[in-house]
Length: 283
Image 1 (cartoon, rainbow, N blue to C red):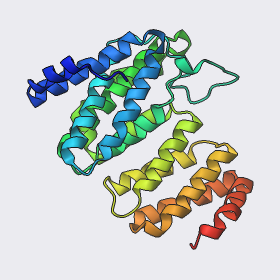
Image 2 (image 1 turned 120 degrees about the vertical axis):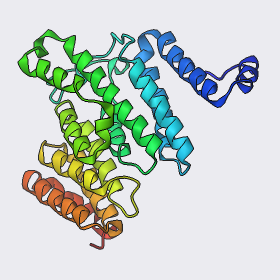
Image 3 (image 1 turned 90 degrees about the vertical axis):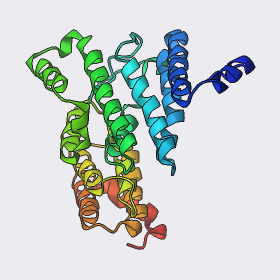
Image 4 (image 1 turned 45 degrees about the horizontal axis):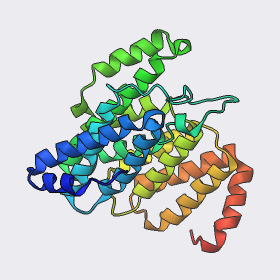
């Protein structure tokens, strides 16, 4: 990401905080636009830089970082990113190869993080996360509408239902869980694994997010798809590393169910994972 010149930094000092943040939003959008065919790569680079700040201990930093993500999510619903590959938002992609410059590999991380942040303690961050999640789903539907083979009654109904949904509704934990289910049909196994690992980490006490929602996310994603051996290993290790810090009954039951489901579908991989992590496991 380019660093503003000295004159630009001097100009920023004369702006109010709100004007400075608006200027930052404009700069980030310009970076995406000016990247040309690498626009999708630049967008994801920016998001990667912003996401850690949404976990800041300072509520003001959390909200500002999440607001930048929300503005970018809104921006990409109006700015065309023609280089996004059709494998984006496809749960199953058979014999497909595309350039990394065409891939939107952050869908899982964004969906998981934004969903959890809709339940964080800071009110401002919650609202911005809801806005960002709403825009992200709009972006997904827009991209899918470009591919004729995905058109149909179900797709049109999804779009109509989503347009009738208001961002503030995402602030209700029960409704957030339903919206999360809408996203799951677009997630590839790697996306699902990213979210599961994120949700398992959020089950630890104390948690910055809703433990019941995180447990629900684990239940839904573990039960709904097959995973590669390496993904099973990562999930099992995450469960056993997190379990000593998990206190809530709903979270413990979720982890138990996850292990049982994985054992039923991937018994060999689970046994191998347990044997590899057993020296560091006490549970």
